[in-house]
Length: 341
Image (cartoon, rainbow, N blue to C red):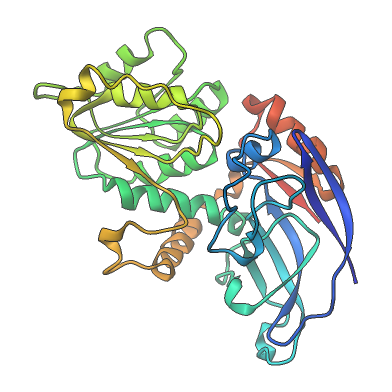
């Protein structure tokens, strides 16, 4: 059969290509994609040509084998329905709704262990947020927020908004968020942020400090998350963090460099900079946590949060180029864009 697949062919260039897809081999199933979600962070780096070409796309996911050199298929949030079974696959898989870390394409082959069955009652529109919610859950595991702490989040893209939603359930003393775009700041406050600020404002750090009243030699946030994708925000997060505080760095900057001031406040603050990335689990947690447990937690949070309400734009698959152009040129208008098939 034929399928339509989306390729990144050069900086700010995407194209649909027709490919021949064989019948499922032994142990494989054929999935027809219903919707897929565009990542406004990692995918935009790829779209803009800012991903390091010598870096593996993901060494843990079969569908994302290879590096970031053009042309490439990329994407990791697809929900579809199993249409056909290869020999050796249990009959119960036929017709199931499944999630896959798969690029944007109308059909794909996978083995059952590469698929996640949607829990009963969860819609495809909620399930397509699985990677973003799993990332937000990972940020919680890595940051380990405590009761009464003061937390700041730099970046209120979709992952930042999901993290804000989860942290709003914590008994924190303060939760302040920062984002360039008014639409995201208003939504952040609706989701539970005590205050949401424009990080480009001259008084942003002063207002943040006022919202994070701490004690000790270096007052400030107990915990900061830098997930804006902007390297300059990491310097702001360090400046906002108090003595022995933690900064969780969840952004992937690609080829962008970060210029940090580590000569003053940071030098005496004993703060910790924590790299966080969803493809692995922090070693200190692996005695109790594995990916299966994190998957269960992610499904639970998706059912509770119901993030389909964050979808702002839906594009038919044949209009994917317009979808990327919108995210690239008008990020202020976008929360989450999905492709429909």
